[in-house]
Image (tube, rainbow, N blue to C red; front, side):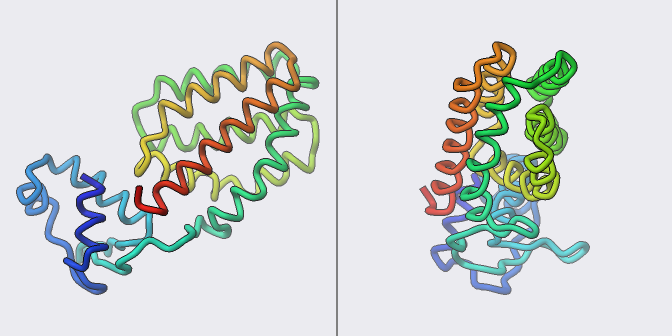
Length: 211
Protein backbone atom coordinates (compact mmCIF):
# COMPACT_ATOMS: atom_id res chain seq x y z
CA UNK A 1 0.00 0.00 0.00
CA UNK A 2 2.83 2.34 0.87
CA UNK A 3 4.46 1.70 -2.51
CA UNK A 4 1.20 2.52 -4.33
CA UNK A 5 0.86 5.89 -2.61
CA UNK A 6 4.56 6.61 -3.05
CA UNK A 7 4.29 5.83 -6.78
CA UNK A 8 1.26 8.10 -7.15
CA UNK A 9 3.24 10.94 -5.58
CA UNK A 10 6.47 10.33 -7.48
CA UNK A 11 4.72 9.79 -10.83
CA UNK A 12 3.22 13.26 -10.75
CA UNK A 13 -0.35 12.33 -9.91
CA UNK A 14 0.04 14.71 -6.99
CA UNK A 15 1.99 17.96 -6.99
CA UNK A 16 3.72 19.74 -4.14
CA UNK A 17 1.06 21.46 -2.07
CA UNK A 18 -1.70 19.04 -2.99
CA UNK A 19 -3.79 17.69 -0.14
CA UNK A 20 -4.33 13.95 -0.04
CA UNK A 21 -7.85 12.62 0.39
CA UNK A 22 -9.07 11.61 3.84
CA UNK A 23 -8.11 8.24 5.25
CA UNK A 24 -11.65 6.99 4.58
CA UNK A 25 -11.58 8.09 0.94
CA UNK A 26 -8.08 6.67 0.38
CA UNK A 27 -9.16 3.39 1.95
CA UNK A 28 -12.08 3.19 -0.47
CA UNK A 29 -9.90 4.26 -3.41
CA UNK A 30 -7.25 1.62 -2.79
CA UNK A 31 -9.60 -1.04 -1.44
CA UNK A 32 -7.91 -1.48 1.93
CA UNK A 33 -8.69 -0.72 5.57
CA UNK A 34 -8.15 2.66 7.17
CA UNK A 35 -5.47 1.19 9.44
CA UNK A 36 -3.48 0.12 6.36
CA UNK A 37 -3.84 3.60 4.89
CA UNK A 38 -2.79 5.17 8.18
CA UNK A 39 0.40 3.08 8.23
CA UNK A 40 1.13 3.90 4.58
CA UNK A 41 0.72 7.63 5.25
CA UNK A 42 3.13 7.41 8.18
CA UNK A 43 5.61 5.75 5.81
CA UNK A 44 5.46 8.41 3.09
CA UNK A 45 5.75 11.06 5.78
CA UNK A 46 8.82 9.28 7.22
CA UNK A 47 10.43 9.55 3.78
CA UNK A 48 9.74 13.27 3.59
CA UNK A 49 7.14 13.08 0.80
CA UNK A 50 4.23 14.35 2.86
CA UNK A 51 3.54 16.31 6.02
CA UNK A 52 0.46 16.10 8.22
CA UNK A 53 -0.96 19.33 9.59
CA UNK A 54 -3.22 18.90 12.59
CA UNK A 55 -6.82 19.62 11.75
CA UNK A 56 -6.04 20.22 8.09
CA UNK A 57 -4.89 16.92 6.64
CA UNK A 58 -1.88 15.45 4.84
CA UNK A 59 -0.13 17.48 2.15
CA UNK A 60 2.50 16.60 -0.46
CA UNK A 61 5.75 18.43 0.30
CA UNK A 62 8.07 16.65 -2.16
CA UNK A 63 7.58 14.49 -5.26
CA UNK A 64 10.75 12.45 -4.84
CA UNK A 65 12.64 11.01 -1.90
CA UNK A 66 15.86 12.84 -1.15
CA UNK A 67 19.10 10.89 -1.53
CA UNK A 68 19.44 11.09 2.24
CA UNK A 69 17.10 11.26 5.21
CA UNK A 70 17.30 13.84 7.94
CA UNK A 71 16.90 12.11 11.29
CA UNK A 72 16.73 14.93 13.78
CA UNK A 73 20.19 16.46 14.11
CA UNK A 74 21.84 13.85 11.89
CA UNK A 75 21.27 12.36 8.47
CA UNK A 76 20.95 8.67 7.66
CA UNK A 77 24.30 8.91 5.88
CA UNK A 78 25.91 10.43 8.98
CA UNK A 79 24.69 7.50 11.07
CA UNK A 80 25.60 4.81 8.55
CA UNK A 81 29.14 6.13 8.23
CA UNK A 82 29.71 6.56 11.97
CA UNK A 83 27.92 3.65 13.63
CA UNK A 84 30.27 0.83 12.51
CA UNK A 85 33.22 2.71 14.03
CA UNK A 86 31.40 3.00 17.35
CA UNK A 87 29.03 0.09 17.81
CA UNK A 88 31.14 -2.73 16.34
CA UNK A 89 34.06 -2.24 18.77
CA UNK A 90 31.59 -1.48 21.56
CA UNK A 91 29.94 -4.87 21.04
CA UNK A 92 33.35 -6.55 21.12
CA UNK A 93 34.27 -4.82 24.36
CA UNK A 94 30.86 -5.62 25.85
CA UNK A 95 31.56 -9.31 25.28
CA UNK A 96 34.79 -8.95 27.25
CA UNK A 97 33.62 -6.64 30.01
CA UNK A 98 29.89 -7.16 30.54
CA UNK A 99 28.71 -7.90 34.04
CA UNK A 100 25.99 -10.43 34.86
CA UNK A 101 23.69 -7.45 35.39
CA UNK A 102 24.57 -6.04 31.95
CA UNK A 103 23.78 -9.37 30.32
CA UNK A 104 20.49 -9.76 32.19
CA UNK A 105 19.48 -6.24 31.13
CA UNK A 106 20.24 -6.96 27.47
CA UNK A 107 18.29 -10.22 27.59
CA UNK A 108 15.32 -8.44 29.17
CA UNK A 109 15.33 -5.80 26.43
CA UNK A 110 15.48 -8.36 23.63
CA UNK A 111 12.72 -10.44 25.24
CA UNK A 112 10.53 -7.34 25.51
CA UNK A 113 11.26 -6.38 21.89
CA UNK A 114 10.26 -9.81 20.59
CA UNK A 115 6.95 -9.60 22.44
CA UNK A 116 6.20 -5.98 21.53
CA UNK A 117 3.43 -5.20 19.04
CA UNK A 118 3.44 -1.43 19.47
CA UNK A 119 5.88 0.03 16.89
CA UNK A 120 6.67 3.11 18.98
CA UNK A 121 7.37 1.05 22.09
CA UNK A 122 9.60 -1.27 20.04
CA UNK A 123 11.59 1.67 18.68
CA UNK A 124 12.20 2.93 22.23
CA UNK A 125 13.41 -0.53 23.25
CA UNK A 126 15.70 -0.66 20.21
CA UNK A 127 17.37 2.58 21.25
CA UNK A 128 17.73 1.20 24.79
CA UNK A 129 19.33 -1.97 23.40
CA UNK A 130 22.09 -0.11 21.58
CA UNK A 131 22.64 2.18 24.56
CA UNK A 132 22.93 -0.83 26.89
CA UNK A 133 25.61 -2.42 24.71
CA UNK A 134 27.62 0.80 24.71
CA UNK A 135 27.29 0.97 28.50
CA UNK A 136 28.34 -2.68 28.86
CA UNK A 137 31.48 -1.93 26.80
CA UNK A 138 32.83 0.02 29.76
CA UNK A 139 33.98 2.76 27.39
CA UNK A 140 32.54 6.13 28.40
CA UNK A 141 33.21 7.67 24.98
CA UNK A 142 31.17 5.00 23.19
CA UNK A 143 28.42 5.33 25.77
CA UNK A 144 28.29 9.12 25.45
CA UNK A 145 28.17 9.01 21.66
CA UNK A 146 25.25 6.56 21.63
CA UNK A 147 23.37 8.70 24.15
CA UNK A 148 23.98 11.72 21.89
CA UNK A 149 22.60 10.03 18.78
CA UNK A 150 19.85 8.07 20.54
CA UNK A 151 16.98 10.17 19.13
CA UNK A 152 18.35 9.86 15.60
CA UNK A 153 18.70 6.09 16.03
CA UNK A 154 15.07 5.89 17.14
CA UNK A 155 13.95 7.93 14.13
CA UNK A 156 15.96 5.71 11.78
CA UNK A 157 14.56 2.56 13.37
CA UNK A 158 11.01 3.87 13.06
CA UNK A 159 11.51 4.68 9.38
CA UNK A 160 12.91 1.23 8.62
CA UNK A 161 10.06 -0.49 10.46
CA UNK A 162 7.42 1.55 8.66
CA UNK A 163 8.89 1.29 5.19
CA UNK A 164 11.03 -1.86 5.12
CA UNK A 165 9.30 -3.96 7.81
CA UNK A 166 12.59 -4.64 9.62
CA UNK A 167 11.28 -5.31 13.12
CA UNK A 168 11.27 -9.13 13.11
CA UNK A 169 14.60 -9.38 11.29
CA UNK A 170 16.15 -6.89 13.70
CA UNK A 171 14.97 -8.99 16.64
CA UNK A 172 16.83 -12.00 15.22
CA UNK A 173 19.98 -9.93 14.65
CA UNK A 174 19.81 -8.61 18.21
CA UNK A 175 19.52 -12.15 19.59
CA UNK A 176 22.75 -13.12 17.80
CA UNK A 177 24.54 -10.10 19.23
CA UNK A 178 23.44 -10.92 22.78
CA UNK A 179 24.34 -14.59 22.40
CA UNK A 180 27.90 -13.62 21.45
CA UNK A 181 28.10 -11.20 24.37
CA UNK A 182 26.83 -13.90 26.71
CA UNK A 183 29.50 -16.29 25.41
CA UNK A 184 32.14 -13.59 25.90
CA UNK A 185 33.04 -14.05 22.23
CA UNK A 186 34.37 -10.64 21.29
CA UNK A 187 34.96 -11.46 17.61
CA UNK A 188 31.48 -12.94 17.19
CA UNK A 189 29.84 -9.99 18.96
CA UNK A 190 31.65 -7.50 16.71
CA UNK A 191 30.76 -9.55 13.62
CA UNK A 192 27.10 -9.82 14.62
CA UNK A 193 26.88 -6.09 15.20
CA UNK A 194 28.62 -5.41 11.87
CA UNK A 195 26.12 -7.67 10.11
CA UNK A 196 23.22 -5.87 11.80
CA UNK A 197 24.47 -2.42 10.83
CA UNK A 198 25.16 -3.57 7.27
CA UNK A 199 21.59 -4.85 6.97
CA UNK A 200 20.27 -1.53 8.29
CA UNK A 201 22.34 0.38 5.75
CA UNK A 202 21.17 -1.85 2.89
CA UNK A 203 17.53 -1.44 3.91
CA UNK A 204 17.89 2.34 3.94
CA UNK A 205 19.52 2.31 0.51
CA UNK A 206 16.65 0.19 -0.80
CA UNK A 207 13.90 2.51 0.39
CA UNK A 208 15.73 5.65 -0.69
CA UNK A 209 16.15 4.20 -4.17
CA UNK A 210 12.51 3.17 -4.31
CA UNK A 211 13.17 -0.54 -4.77
